[in-house]
Image (cartoon, rainbow, N blue to C red):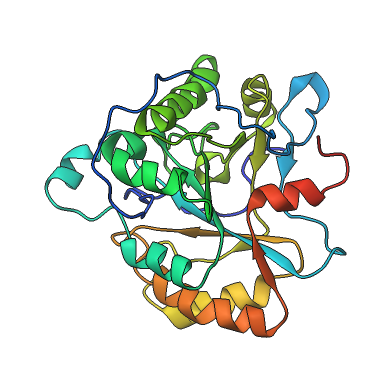
Length: 277
């Protein structure tokens, strides 16, 4: 795979982990790798040269399943904006997912977890959700990625490790061994760099178009038109940069259920994929 993949708008606003707020707490020590649970989450085997495998969607022939994913982006320089009152969370969206009993995978930046440890912890400890890695501060792992600053090749591995450390420090007990490249941009060098950590790179096959969107009906149509069995849908969960997402979810979920779809986490789709380990 070369260069940039499908569109994921590089958000300048923090796409928050949108959970129920809990008081910050010190959390466990901060190791630099994803923690392990009793049963390790499914991953895909590494590619040539130890490159991270890339997962875009689950099998098309094992029933109507779909995974909703939400990117929780926050860049290194957005702390002052959060302090000034900009809303980098979307509790209404998470409340809707809970009410509708829709599991989801949250790809969270370490910078956001540092800013909002209580919400990161709430999501990480809620069995309805799983929290995965979206880099430390949403810098691109290739050049020319929607204007994002870039991470030097020598720092790619440590950036992912730093994000895992932030998730653990915030109280996420078992961050998943899944990594989403900021902007969805990667190349062979980036895959080799993060492959040493044993992560599976998770992309998507349905772009919701919710980032910066103001027309919820257009986003809804794009999702409904794109979903197929095994799809991974990319969405965002911040009020400031994706204000229509909660409304979209309220409309899309019952319609997909009417069409016979069952909502799952990314881990279930990877676990259905031939060759997973």
